[in-house]
Length: 594
Image 1 (cartoon, rainbow, N blue to C red):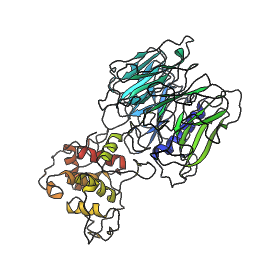
Image 2: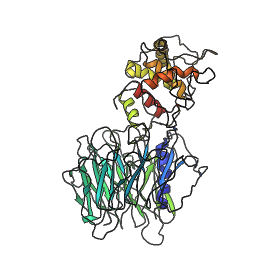
Image 3: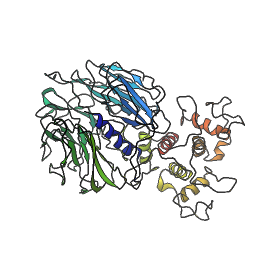
Image 4: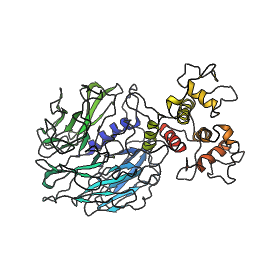
């Protein structure tokens, strides 16, 4: 009954995560190399992320055959995968950098009572798996519970406990937390959500349960949040969504219940005016939050609506004050009973027209998509199950971009570059972390980093240094600034700069080394003597090595801890640099606070 939900989450997640620009309309077709088969039912929801560090997205999902699979975008298996657990995997994987090495790890629960964590190459993360005393249907959430800058793992178990571990597998102080045992003994499916409920700058944990029909909220240290738990009229299988429903700047908690109702509470546990709202049947669906009617608000970021499915074959949408959005609910077809919309809605601009669509699967064997005919410009606060395509379950209160969720392999560095006024996003709240970086963009990044932000880059005086970068070019003043600091040069064969050329990792090392050398530019590299023995076997001083010209620059940035290479111990100078990797280079090279 959850198979369709898997497909729709994957389809919308692909759009949201890859970050297609709003003016790119796309046709829907089966991706070459897909579908891929497992040996069991797939009730887990896919996570999308660059688990092997190649700059491309991989698909990670669990199966009833006890395995967790990882495929490249073309459908080929990622080296080291699938991996085997000791039970069925209903839990949806979460992706995040558990050990602070800049790479994504995969975290997932299993019905063998364990929670697993693997590196992208399939090796177990040190300290994992961790064991609970019950089956783990719940999907892990990843967030910094204790404010130490590292991710913690939070997950519920059928042993009526909620667990929290550090990235090394050690228990977070104050956890696990225990609730009253479900008297019926049924498994609980609710997955935790993480967000700052009380405005203190720290994350709280929110999760539903079957026991006494409660929704719990704890601080990062395991103490209850004042005003919680709150009680519904029946079991809470739905997973909470977090967002600012009433525009007061604080998070509210929204969740469905088996009592046919959708609840909304303020961070202090008091009901939001106008809630709960009632549907025509049981709710297992998890809410999505977004601006469906384009009504806007005082600060221009849009009022939130709540979208959720029900067993009554309908998908509902309410405004933050509980009034029904015009045109909703929408009805799916009746099929063999009333458990029709178990799937959780996903929100996104599917067709590239700038308008928001609502997509959901139903048990009538169909996937529905409705257009709201309203422009979507800002990152959506909770657009899908467990918040984002990495399934982190963490509200990105400080995230600038809809395609860079918490736990994304470069999210800290991207945030740091934004804070330092070095990088900016694209219209509509996109960063496009997987887009290739050009020579023009490298000049912008390095110039801003060197000048302490965009305002520090002076206007350039004519004439231009390169005929292909006139004074009207958006990159002009940045390229001229970089030229003046002897960081960039033109091509000797034609005297042009070629701002449109993509930059590989070998060239990136040259740019970064020159920008951080003392004195700045090539003069600072003159006295540098690289080691005789290369750090990386694919970048050597051998004159026959095609990347020999980059050798001293690669060694320089390796000595300064800007790069450690890939898990295969190579640097891969031939790999094209994307915007996510560019942020990592700049953040490390200029020692930006993360």
